Image 1 (cartoon, one colour):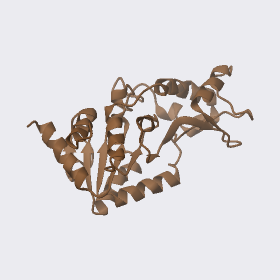
Image 2: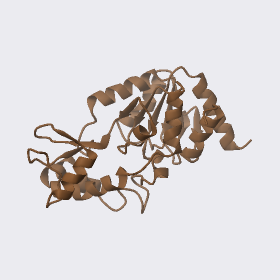
Image 3: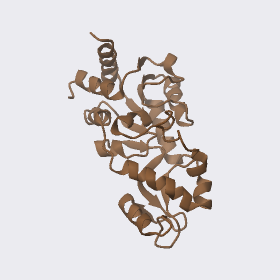
Image 4: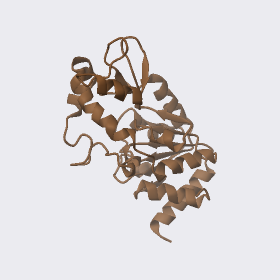
Length: 254
């Protein structure tokens, strides 16, 4: 039996035996869908640009044209991407009653497209943008149309104010309700699956410690090293698609 097979079968058994399983996902789960991660040299989203100069809340307020020049391209990259087999594997686990929820750091909507129902998008979503002045909300296709029609490339509310994507920018706090829900889920989890995340960005990186403090276990499924590797009950370092599809196969879920 291969090492991957051994690890995925062990992980499948842990999932089956746990009373509560929660997944925490990061950028690595979406890389197989053609979405770049953040810091890989040459290809990462921040490899050739300083995020503080383009994706900070102060940039949006001070220079919305510059902000949307970057974010408009980001939206174009993300809008038509489709979930991969790792996203679908988590949706199958949820449908089978083996996964309580997915907490994601991603804004790409791929878990939603894959069919996950209990989803906490802790950094927000590209699915809609809102007006900071009057609070009106617009869905992504409408936002794109408004941006295309504006001479400066800024999607505007009917009131005239620039729209802000409903994602957490640099300089902003995470939504309190989403963070509280994520903390509650992590605290009550018998097993937290940490998938495709470096587990280095706080406060989300605190969630594995919350599970451990509550008496639960963590499984780390990602290519790169994380600060929790030595504390994980199981460490899968292979491709997230291979690992998660191996888990669902071992559980008889296809």
